[in-house]
Length: 432
Image 1: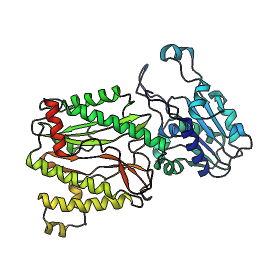
Image 2: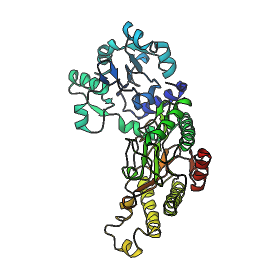
Image 3: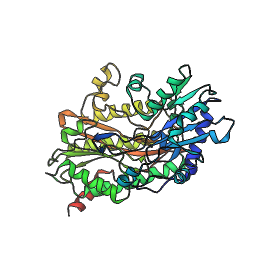
Image 4: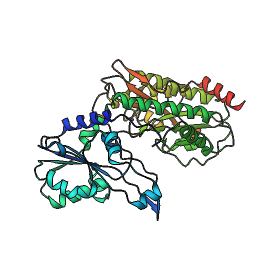
């Protein structure tokens, strides 16, 4: 990883929180991710499995974590198995973490070899009343998976078919929803790098360029600043492409007079930023574009102010939808009378605003979240109102990362310009 390691105390703290959530006498097993083959000796880019990183801070593959907090022997309460590196691996890929480095990063004292797994299972599993596995929610997906977690699950269940087992995610989700100060600090860094990338991209946007040219400026800025790269596949969508919510081909031409929707974010130490801006390719908004843009901007400010402790995400979205109805009528998309006749209620504003207003952000750009839980201090979420108008061949989305505080919300991307006039000014400077 390009980023400096996080302090081991963060991961010790995260494991302690998980231990308090486990059933008495139980065992939890969490595996690192693994490289996925692309062809022959080539692999897709590797990125650590988020839950494993949350508990250990280790970015490499080839590890299995066992947590058994009630085991009578201290050396069995936290054990990390690590795969030996072959001489061939060292020659081709360089040295991997040594046991001492793994212990320093994670705060785990007891590091063992991967070939001791069977012995460890025999020691930990039979006395356990319950064992937690880090498996996906969907049972069909679980059955088809050949992930490290699935392989350990099948290994254990084949030997102990009557064992009680459960998924770990219902315990990890509420923990990951509330960010520790060290996690917020990494998200701040990712947001700051994302801000630099936006300024860089603005300086090159012009009619006739390709969407991927703006993308190139973004990734260059990320790498220069020391980020791991994109937190997710970026969206550079001009004109009608902005009507595709997760468009990421980024191969179109930026036409004069059109709007370019940009949805992107840096990743720092596995923590994500998520920013959306919509800018005029020619450097100035038309009168109609400005009216639409300012409506999104107004909704953004009001939605952000609603994000405070005690609010449910579904309530937030409904209230934002009601605000959108007022704006839609003002913009001439439908009349007050048509709004009064809509059935079911909300069916008109949802036609132009199809996605949610907010999602959790952390180790994943769409971090685990329970929408039945009200907002609490320490949560980090997006705020992303938008409008999509197929008849006018455009989409406008504005999105920042928001930290919920004791008294309300802090906008972690307030330094990234959003005002239409400021956007136009910066584009004039970039074009000069």
